[in-house]
Image (cartoon, each protein chain N blue to C red):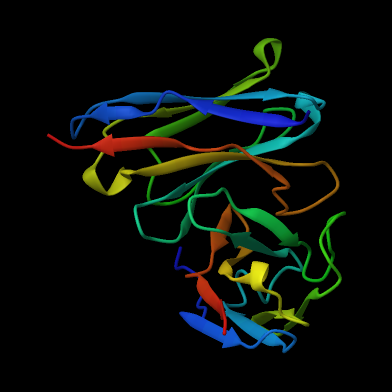
Length: 120
Length: 109
């Protein structure tokens, strides 16, 4: 079964750090770009970050540029999102999603999401 | 990056059609044929319904169709069914990343 499973969410104080993981299974990991999308409670979807299938190209929304870092470990079929200097406005459910090769801006499989709460 | 503009709500009776617009700029919607549409039911992860403006992934009913003109993309749902009631988001490639629309809640009357 093609699957993405996020983990690492939780409660963190403003200014703190958290690392999210997105574990992939059931498909050729290295061939797919992986993106992170977040959704604040009661709000819409917001693009956060992405990494190409070969890991050479990364993408960041301006709201997180310089604070978040995306990376991937092919040996573990896992993508990470290191989140530093967290702000209250970063509080959201974070989804990871895969984008298959040959298709553009087409996230066809999504994880169930992990909640990040930023509060003192 | 500014979110793409969608109407907050749209509605139709079963069997009718509803069209949702998604307005951006020449730097996103108008500049690339990389517009996608996602359906999201409450408490669930988004589901890809249309990609690259008008292509449907396997398993998505042909009642869903997409188009684009200039800086505005559109999603049409024909033959509305109860299960189509959900939030819909457009998304576009914007050169250095992707951007989502503000979202539209579709209600089946």
